[in-house]
Length: 633
Image (cartoon, rainbow, N blue to C red; front, side, top):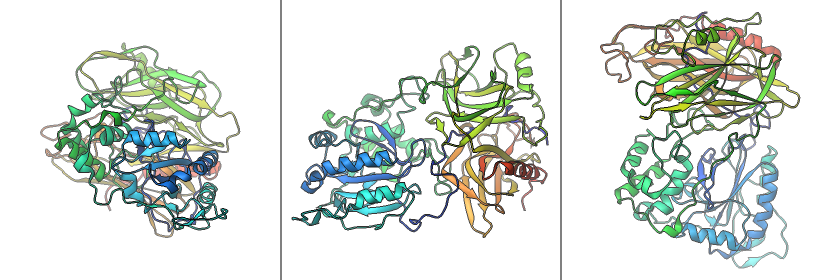
């Protein structure tokens, strides 16, 4: 098998991921039939301006929320008890939030209320009613516990203090909310999935339309802070900032347009076809808010309701001081104009012995031009020879006639070039749980493949990768796999060239992330697994492939594939003149190759075998996939 060494020509973004600390092997939950919450991964803003991803931290965690009201006496009376519950929830790894969701309540009033009642936990300001629409509370206060499968494991009262309005027990006998949090945190189902809350009726959104009174300070700023500002701020990858009213007002119609067409935020995986950690999508109601605001003339609203701007880490490394920093050897000069640049920088590995990597972070030298980075290890010496043969720093094969070297495999069948990490704007560093690591063989060279998109002004870049090593025993290692075909021969004008590749799963494993890969002729890809009992497990589907926006997609929780499963990947290519990304006009015959006007048909995925000795068999099954023709059935 040739040309499978990934360090040359591959533009596929490896994910940074975390595996739930509760373990890799998933099992059926007692809450399997509970209603889906649809909140895990949702980006929200609290009253202090901090941005949170619900249910996502270093790992996927449960979420506890309680809907509050600034004027409900029953909700206010629970303030001290909620602080106690929140402290206990945080200690057992559960996110805890209050929620204020009322179009008649200003952010200022909500902040004053939080201070008056000394609430110690973050309070989310549900400006557009998105959380209320998804969870549908009926009462204030009403509590919810959402498990790591994004299911409502509990909803109802905080405890049994109130029998009815105006009737209060002398002593509390049932601590329903706290008990539900503790149960879900331990992986169990609450004793009661639903109780009847007592309090003020939740009627905040009855007959109310956010579109009638939407303003920047109350409605738009929190939405953009949660979903856009991380990239659209001074000095970052976004072409303009979106962190002030003036910045946003002058682009109101454009923001409405790119969100309505789903151009922004950039996310290409089809909804409902796999559940991923870093989903960057807006709901229909959130898009409606942006459109209504633009149509109303982008009103500012009361400046007293301004949401504090989000804060971002000031330190270079978000996980603290690394064990190893892999930095480009020199500043690379990025021109003001021209085609996008894919450049490979070679850095020697200073460690002779193998290392167990448990966390990785990446920092772009100039985030305004660094579109993404993929990090590889190369033990063949090919990358260094290519670098030595090029006068300028690094080397490039894209858009050239350079030949990519054949891959090489050692006696155990493992690839001697391997992908180890990747980064794109908004990507968080990964941290693996205790006992799980990524194996980094000693010696060789690190290779940083960096995609530069030019900004119109000349600059320099000196990006760096940070690695953190295990300080305890490692029980299992991740393995990087790829299935695909080199049998690609696309006739000019063919609008629907199909390839089908598949792999039998020889032993039990968990899939951590997936990364389809094609070039400019790619149109769509669908990957699914068929389990031994015949059930289908969708892994990913991308209906509108875009070579410029490739990425790895990390599952919220690993996908369990037992022995006897099968992975099928279906690729569609468009070599017609109707494909606006076609690099040839008129179209020409296209075959497999590394250059951007060649094509590739690959599907990368990271797995953790149940037993380390099973890795060899899994790799053999991977190699067998390349022996098939790839022709559709």
